Amino acid sequence: MKIFNKTLIAVSVALVSTQTMAAGFQINAQSATGIGRAFAGDAVIADNASVLSRNPAAMALFDEKQLSMGLTYADVQVEVQDVALGSVHYGSVDDAAEAKVIPNFYYVSPVNDKFAYGVAMFSNFGTGTDTTDLSSNIVGGILPPPIDLLGKTEVTTINFNLSASYRFNDHFSVGAGVDVIYGSGTLTRGGSMPSMEGPVHTDLADVDADGIAFGGIVGAVYEINADHRFGVSYRFSPEFTADGTVNYLGTDFEEINIPLPDIFQVAGFHQLTEKFALHYTAQMTTWGDFHEITVTDPAEAQLKKYAWDDSWLFSVGGTYTLNDSWTLRAGYMFDQGVVGEVSSISIPDSDRQWYTMGATYNLSKHTSLDFGIAFVRGEETHLTEQSVIGLIDATTTSNATYYSIQYNYKF
Image 1 (cartoon, rainbow, N blue to C red):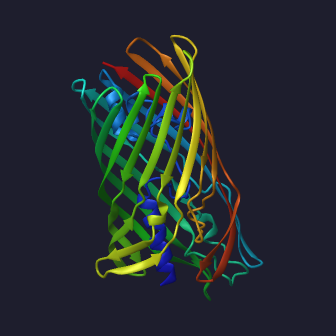
Image 2: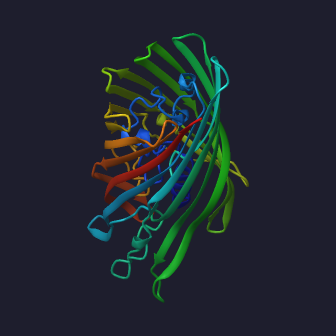
Image 3: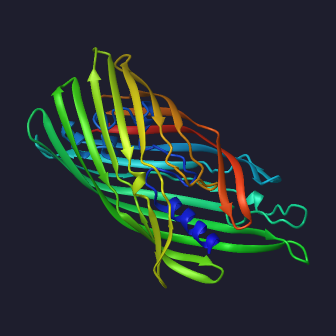
């Protein structure tokens, strides 16, 4: 039963966490401009339509229709080193993650000087981990590897959003939107077990599940004047139900129910000079709500209490208008890890430092291109995780580099 619980927990987290990837590595990849400034001020800057991913109220700052679309290449590096049971060592995996291309699309349309609406498509995360290489290492031909902890996790999520905003006056605007979240993923757990005839491959879990959940977002913008403004938003996340097949030793469960965290953020923007602007963001994700995972069909059961901690990120950035053609930006983010008392080889996590830069090139009065790059560095983390063969030790490190490009058009 322990193997079953751990396997279901791993796939549940991988399928539908809104701000963490399967490797427990937080990703923000909604726009090239956001990446270039470490998403500092993104809930209120509104320099292109990608603001829809952060704050629907900021659509009130638009006086013309805008389209933004782009791609982010996430090169994620996850190392799982020195996996061991006491003095018995199973080895390491130097590249346990896969790179992903993450698309996005945004359209904002003002109706009049009061109302605006927008549609968006973006991804909150999308990557995977694979520690299968360690699952066939039978030490001394007798001691099996911790195959209940090893295997492959593959995840894809897409968020579809429809939002509207309303401007009360020159200072105050509000907005709200509906999120339709699609998530899909696969997970395998298994490996080699010793026998009198030699190693025998054993499959503990083979998971293929997907589902749709509904959430929402509300936000507000307060403008002191055209050069100084503040934004706030709150994203409500649903309890996600993934339908599919979860096979464990011949037993199938078809539904997994997972509570998702809400996301609260505040942001500020200040045009300090004609050329330079300062902006910042503080964001909290309520991972403390992630307290219980259950399965249903053919039976309803609580798999495990799995306590994570609420996490904060803080970012600050600057934008410099070089000339009529080029705008430059840079940023820094401190991103707090979510794993509390319970750690996992398949979901490694730590605090992260973001170092970012980007630029916008204006092709014409209506068309521009954005570029962004982020270097994300995690901490080396020593963890222990209970396996059916004993207490497993390991050292994990998670890093990433994001490359992003975006096309913008003003109608």
